[in-house]
Image (cartoon, rainbow, N blue to C red; front, side, top):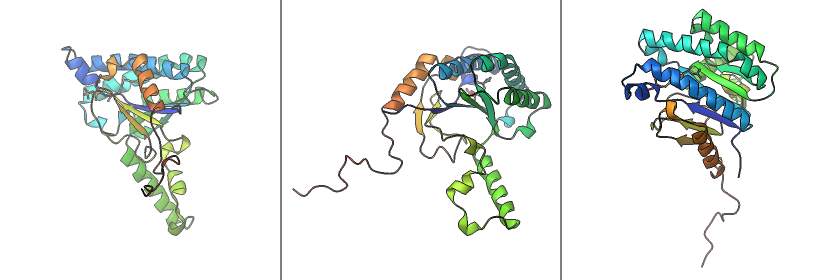
Length: 243
Ligand code: FPP
């Protein structure tokens, strides 16, 4: 029985949750942010080493301008407001994704929170912001190509290990468990490379209804999974024994 150390979450369903209550989608995001805070606290209390939250994808820019702008302000506001709590809980804040496209006020908040918490040694909280798994891999390919071009890397010697060192996610261990709410059963361009052997857990509830108890159920479910990483369990004979 092993414990999940790194949990990554696709916090899906804010919009549908709000719409089912005849409220604007933004109301769902506000509730979603409250739930995110509760789950971060739960992750600290449960002693997780890493928690990655998919807060804004590279595709989310295609939403109505008003929603994108609301999400940016909400994210910046939440991160700024929770800085003290991050410090009290010894949480180290980090991000994955391309911050350069974020509005300046949001970028500043992210830079400040990252700097402020950089010496904290507890939970590593990672916000995926303007993050896309394919974009991350493409960026790594471009960096590798540049290294090859300047003669610093021989393509024949490129290994999975070297390649992954060019990825944003390289700074963190692979997620043990990926949770997605709202009943959708897909990865949606979230962590692609390092999720190769992550366990998946899908919940029907929309993110604003997700609770610390639901989080515990996901963690408990993980402990029952048999992770073989493409190998076989030694207790199972590789070939059938002849009768
Ligand atoms: C998915 O719901 C949610 C997002 C795209 C944004 C996630 C943002 C939050 C939970 C709020 C801020 C979070 C933090 C951590 C401060 P959706 O809009 O795709 O819902 P839908 O699929 O029902 O349309």
